[in-house]
Amino acid sequence: MSAPPRALLPPGSRMPSLMQGLGFWARPRAVLEHGRRRWGRRFTIRLPGQAPFVVLSDPEEIKQLFQAPPDVLHPGEGARVLEPLLGTNSVILLDEGAHLEQRRLLLPAFHGERVERLEGVIAQLAEREVADWPTGRPVALHGALQRLTLEIILRAVFGLERGSRLVALRELLTDILAFSEHPLSLFPVPEVLALVGPLAGQRSKAAQADALIFELIEERRRGGGGGEGAGGVGIAEGSEGSEGGEGGERRGGGEDVLALLLAARHEDGSQMSAQELRDELMTALAAGHETTASQLAWAFVELARHPLVARRLWEEIEAGEDDTYLTATIHEILRRRPVLPNAEPRLVKRAVEIGGFTYPPGVVLVANAYLVHHDPAIYPDPYAFRPERFLERAPGTYTWIPFGGGRRRCLGASFALLEMKVVLRATLRRWQLEPVGAREGTRRRSITMSPARGGEVVLRARARARPRPRPGAIGGHESRRARAVVR
Image 1 (tube, rainbow, N blue to C red):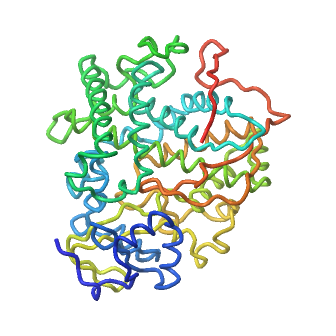
Image 2 (cartoon, rainbow, N blue to C red; image 1 turned 180 degrees about the vertical axis):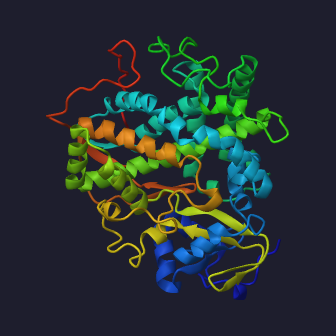
Image 3 (spheres, one colour; image 1 turned 135 degrees about the vertical axis):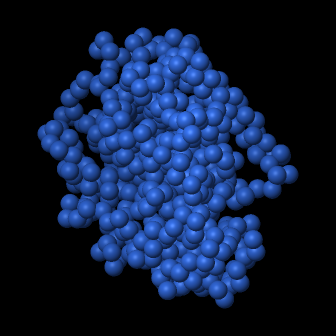
């Protein structure tokens, strides 16, 4: 489909698409803010090898965008750059009826009550991780948070306990997802280039990860894992010390995502195929790992620079009060530092009028969370970090969009919010946070935006911190692995 002429689109930079792409990779926030200053709440960005992107940041236009019929706008086609990682069956990449069907199958796995049952597992893993962080010197927490969120999501998705398979899958996925730091991850790559250089290594590792995932799927299917009432996700007794062996790994059953998807049925009564399962599991892993790790890294950067906020949070946590202020703080972190600035780009399939402007087929429309969240007409003093603004009013449907919106709103939003709460509680109970140097800039990791220095802070032990039992722990004391946290 040929790109529409410039005259039919909102104004934007006339620089070559390659230059725009390099700028958007290296300085994403600067490019977005320049676009708003120069052209207002609607402007066009052109990236190499992609359809023109029209960036929207007016809440009324975003409402129209989110409510457009599924046959008019295709978010799945708009996110096709993710297909090599997620697979063709990913709910993120499907449109119309296929998307609705796949979303229906996935919804039970992310139901609020099921997510809440994972709190004990998340808390145990978080306590173990944060206890090993070094103190008294600058430390970049992003890598440690990546390790933590990946292990949490592996437990929640596959129900895997500590053992050789979890280690193997964790290492492969860490290497695969590390490719997000390469500018090529942002653009479609011709098939011939996918066979050489860093992409060839990516393919090899992806094939190894796929083989392991298919093996796990087949084992669970043979073992009957996936029926209702097969048991909850938990920490297997005797799993401590099983690193490198199979003894601590779940063999079937449970309420992890894999178990629930194995029990799911299409409208015709058929099971999800192994390839469908692989693609949705990889989607859950990719979507729930790097995004939450980066969001938590931003959280610690902000809290280190706002000690009064951190102090109030600690007091609320220690007092055992409700988590009203913690919730407001997380809402403010997601407003101030949205790691996914673009809420699932939507490819125009049929001409559509939004905000009085008619867009022809072939254009990609993007609701930009970063610009909406930093609009002074919506959020007074938008660059200030002030959780109190969300004590005064709840997040708006079209003015607070870190998880997108409409029928494409992120399925894992409840899980991400719970994970952030648990990790922040575990950290603030044990550590005080101090800032390091100048404010951190932004570093792009594929479609996400992370702290440029990896979320650097200094940790100090709290004098009044008192030991608390670890939810889900068995038999009291649990040995700790000594790990260095390095950037």
